[in-house]
Image (tube, rainbow, N blue to C red; front, side):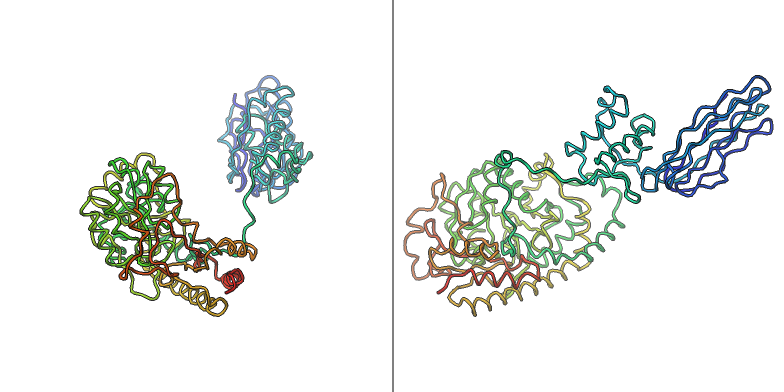
Length: 631
């Protein structure tokens, strides 16, 4: 015969009624419905198999109790005795471990099986199933420890205690219900419930109604002086105000508009969009980028020549590897720029040489005197950090150099959307798309957290870039690409950029006005565009001003930190090119210098007025003025 049985409810719905036995015999007692979700009290468990007349019925096996909704849930009844003659007494059910809906253990009463077998041969109609929802959380434990000395209960307590003590289970971590963990480990649920109860009593776990069983929050004992001395120094205390460059005002990120675009993008996305995708990026984003860049930046682009990357750094790394594979050994960079960019180029196996910068941008005419340089990295729209645009004659000169020598220009258009007192400067790429790579990013216009950038490539480089991208380079998230495509297509991107342009212009005007009032001896340059300005300082004062700014709780960078560091590589510019007087026709640098050569050092601050949130800008501006030297 088959024993009667019942499937107990997971957290949630009502138990269904147990099937009735056939008329040939009387069924055993039904199992109690699991009361966690308000089980139907009428729901009987499956009827026990009825037996024909004969000997005494065997005692039914003890049924294990199910989790109950509140404290004191009723356990399952014992199986009905085998009724081959007079039915024997039903077996005693195990104690019910009352469980709240969130999985908290409670005390359950013993359930006693009482059904006697009845004569007959009938079978039950089917099992009683109580529906609901389970916790379903997983927990990895060392199964070897469970079989150690002391039995399963002691081994489980030891494994859980070790996981908490080692920090693998962090304070506040929610553990699976006793039923879920027992099923996963293949042991009795009471064993798990007892282990949980022991660890709660010891203070390792907590069990609270509405919160479930969790790892207890505890005070970590202080480290010894020896261990503290051996640890590396941690990060410095975060400054109160931040005027360092590199990020926009991220508090102004258009969350509601972005969320709406994400909903629309997900709703309309084809199923294939959730696969691995094209290494070039989603076609929706590449199509809208081609339209936007042509309209707003003067870029000549086709979607098939656009490759989406995870920001500018990845674009530069991929291109540097491609150039190295093509036999390029040296790349020219502006004499003022980010050391992180030069480090990326060096890691790809290329050397860098500095290209002097003056009041009209990089001196691109000197590229002809650098025969080893077959590529150059420029910021033509707004040189970083000096803030000057590349003069039209020098734009034409660099394009002529690339066309004549077969070189490549890498155009970093990091903040080209933000201009205030002049007409927008179009991209150099529009002059010669076959010798200029346009590099753009959403890090300044939206937020660095998106990790979205793009390259507009010459046709001859597309396959080589894709080969590198497909060989282990990380891809940008498809969902973010779809969202940005919808965000731009709907016009929300243009509206956001225009709004931020007005905000940054007001801040720039406040900066200029405050300096004119409180530090009129300080010259401000590079303010026609971008998110930062350069404050020219008296010679020899930059370090003292940085210390004063730190004393005021202000983070700001000095201009010297962006200067090309003198290293083992020889200076590629001959002394007569940069050390001699510039002559009457040469443009003058802000601050009075005629040109920025290898030996010229300027003192100044790079004040990124676009970085702080709106509520902190006034305080940052006041701290900056307090840190500046007196006349």
